Image 1 (spheres, one colour):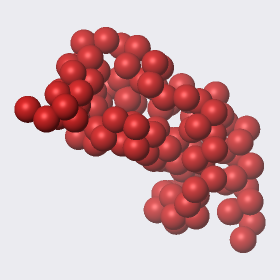
Image 2: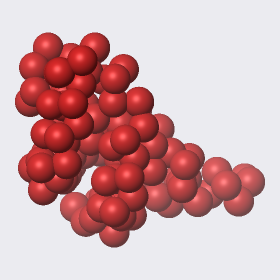
Image 3: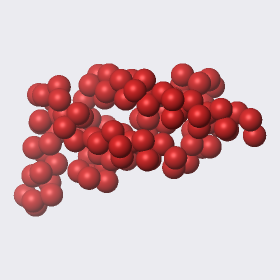
Image 4: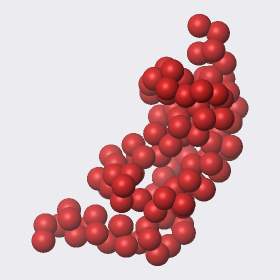
Length: 106
């Protein structure tokens, strides 16, 4: 088995067995920076602010996990991801609201 496949398997097992998977691997400052990448696309794909807030944060979190560990969304523990993304989106609400308002005025 290749080293990358082994690492990926270990990370998946870790994700399934430990609730701190996302907190240990996702830097909130990086999420905050990634919010600025393609918010227009998310804006036009969502129906309201709450959905925009969640989807924008979700894309940032999943991009970090993919870029750093090469783990796609289908391999992540769904419930843990939902809880983590919801908490992060609430924590970054001021930033997300500013982005949303600027897009809403266009």
